[in-house]
Amino acid sequence: MSTANQLLKLRRKKKNNKKVTDLKGNPQLKAICVKLFVKTPKKPNSALRKVAKVKLSTGKLVNSYIPGEGNTLQEYSSVLVKGGKVKDLPGVRYHLVRGCYDLLGLDKRKTSRSKYGASLKKV
Image (cartoon, rainbow, N blue to C red; front, top):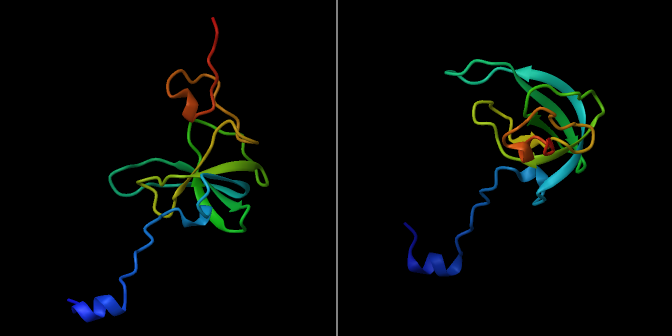
């Protein structure tokens, strides 16, 4: 425990607790796909999750999750990256935004359409 004099002399520093530091305080950043691959989740779950290694406009390389069923991404596709980690994929702390740039939205989506870039279908 610090004494009163130590506390007066040297103020305690606040910890920077932000997990998505590569976005530099921005809500989203443009990025270019470098590599597309699948990852398997942690222990109790079993699947092949689609992941892209992208180069942010700041120059950093990060792994980001591709939400939804199916995608048309290739290498050098432009995408929009937002923060938000995937709980069962270690090292994946970002999501790609559907319906922006080269990552198309889902056509047949009826619920949670805003997350997957799907428009309202008029009957």
